[in-house]
Each structure stands twice: as C-alpha cells, then as structure tokens.
Amino acid sequence: MEAYLLDWLNILLRWLHFITGVAWIGASLYFIWLDNHLEEPRDPADSEKGIGGEVWSVHGGGFYHAQKYRTFPKVLPDTLHWFKWEAYSTWLSGMFLLGLIYFLGAEIYLIDRSVADLSMAAAIGIAVAFIVGGWILYDLMCKTPLAKDDWVFALALLLLCSALAWGLCNLFSGRAAYILFGAVLGTIMVANVFFVIIPGQKQMVAAAERGESPDPAPGLRAKLRSVHNTYFTLPVLFVMTSNHYAMTYSHEYNWAILIGISVAGALIRIYFVARHNGKPSLLPVVVAVMLLAVIAAIIAPRPSSDSLPPATFSELRSVINERCVSCHSRTPTHPAFPAAPLGVMLDSEEQIFDAAQRIYQQTVVTRVMPIGNLTAMTDAERLIVEQWYQSLREEQ
Image (cartoon, rainbow, N blue to C red; front, side):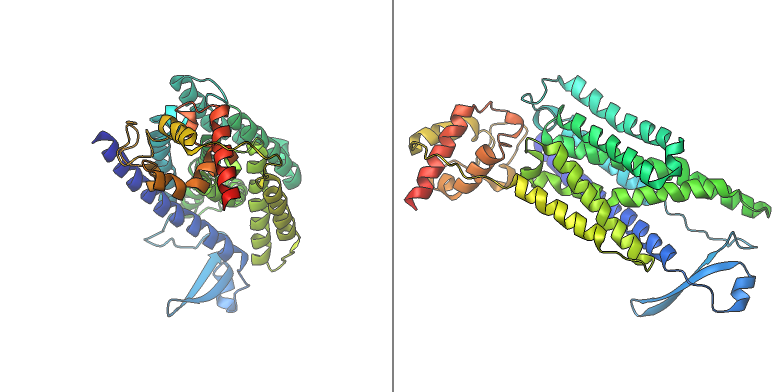
C-alpha cells in the first residue's frame, strides 16, 4: 500500500510540476515576444504620457493593446500583476519530485554502483551540493567583469555547464545525472527571479510610489538574468523529458551528449529571439540541426559484426527470472514497484517473445536495465540476451 500511495503522490507532483512549468515558461516566452515586438506609439499623447512602446494583437476573438512605459506611470494602478509564483511553484514541485523519486529512491534511481560506489547519504549530499553550488558559482560569475561581454560570458557559462554535466555523469546514474543537471539550471532560473528580478522590480515600484526616477542598475541586472533564463529554457525542457530516452543518458559519453543537445536548444532559442527582433538569421538553426544530426549519428546503435553462437530460450529464461521478473511481473516482488514498470511483464514465454526487441534494447544496447543494475546482471548474462536475440532475428 505504501508503494501504491507513493505512486499517486508521484503522479500528482508530476502533473503539478508540468502545469506550473507551462505557466512559468509560457509567461516568460510571451513577455520576451512582447518586449521585442514593441513599436513607437502612434498617438503623440501616449508619448507625452511616457509610453515608450506599444503592440496590438488579436487572440481568442478579442483585440489587445499592450503599452510599455519608458520609466513608470505618474500614478500606479490599484492592481499590479506580478509574475513570480509560476516560477516558485515550478521549482518547489520539482524539488519535491526530485526528493520523492531520486532521493527517497536513491538506491534505485540516483546511485549506479558501476559509475560510483556511493552511500545513500553521500549521494544525496553531493546532489544537493551541486544544486546549491551551481547557483553560487553562476551568481558570482554574473558579478565579475565576465558579465560585461556577452560572448565571453557565454563561453564561461558553457565551460561551467560542461564541467557540471561531466561531474554529474561520473557520479550518478545517467538518468539521475540528466535530471540533476536540469535541477541546477532550474534552480539558477528561479533564484534569478527570487534574488534579482523581483527585488529589482520592487525597487522600481517603490521609486514610482515616491515619485522618484528609479535607479536603472537593478533593472539592467534583472534584464540580464532574464536573458540568461530564456536561453536555459529549452535545455531544461529537454532534461524534463530525457528519462524516456535511454539512448542519450546511457551512452559512454552521456555528458557530452547532454551538453551538445543543450547547446542546440540554446541556439534554437537564439534564433527565435532574433526573429522577435525582426533580424532572424537561420545560421543558429542550421548549426543546431547539424549538431543534433551528429549526435544522432554518434549514438546510433551499431549491429554486431560477429555472428554469435546461439543461446537457447531456457538460458534466456533463466536470466529473465533471475534479473528481471522481480520488477517486470504481474506480481512484482521488489518493494519499490507495486506494478510492472511501463506495464512490461515477463512472466510467460509469450510475453518474453513479444518484448524481445525491448529486452535486447534495454539490457544490451543501452544497458539501462535492470535500472541501476539493481539485480546485478553480469556481462555474461547480457551476452546471453544478445545471442538469443540475434538467433531470433536470424530465424525470422
């Protein structure tokens, strides 16, 4: 019953995290679009009131007219909408989800003893240190002269992210490493909102209420962090879905693949930001597509060049019973799984033959199963799976 209740908590947290993430990222992308589509006000009276730009749009059967002040209005409205709880809710739900799956289930999802033989306490402590330390290092970088040059800062940030990906992938399971990479970037994004963007906006509002001209420095800092956040967006979204694609996180050079895909995502975002400004160049998209194509070619499965001696079904069945059925069964015996993961059951001969390609893909090609190698499947046993599958293919 405990595992069943945890599954429900997992479902609800994932749903909440997805909903709040859509709200946060959607609002962020919209305001970047809005800011980059502002035109000079057509009405001279608007310019005299301090309007610096406006945009007309139509949506859902209605016309909208958005205006942006150069500084602040003479009289603040009674209701001023803030966009912050979307970010905070996304981060909080993500952290709860991280704790529920990867910390509470550290022995299953976080630790891979073939990568690093960590205790549960050490693994969780290191993961938390990465999340906190990532924000501290990034924030310090933003306060150095590096931040004055966009390209220099981008290179420094790329090096930092590369070191982060390499470190995580050499300490944790590939799946967990990718999620933690996203958790570090997501923490940087929400910390930018909490520590820089919102305080800068509060200073602007306070100055407006006093009738004073706001200090431009906090606004400029907030603008810089907001730009950083938009380039983190697509890499974080990839990471949120990465646990479905073992071909990436299970690869020998999973850290490099993670950085390559993240760079491709940032390049695509660069194109869209430029497109909003009316100065699009397809070069970032071309480079991103080429990069993704190279990654796809590198991680493509390679068929065995040698013909292996066949393995009998009874040999395979012995491996399946020993290493797989504790989870992939109608009645799993592993306490962490109240039901067979993804509904894959290997109790009968028919079920094993139906799942033959999946068994081969997960245990031989990507080697992500058993998850975290919980049941200690050996290389010799993986070879039996490969021999059996190859002979099955030859018979077909």
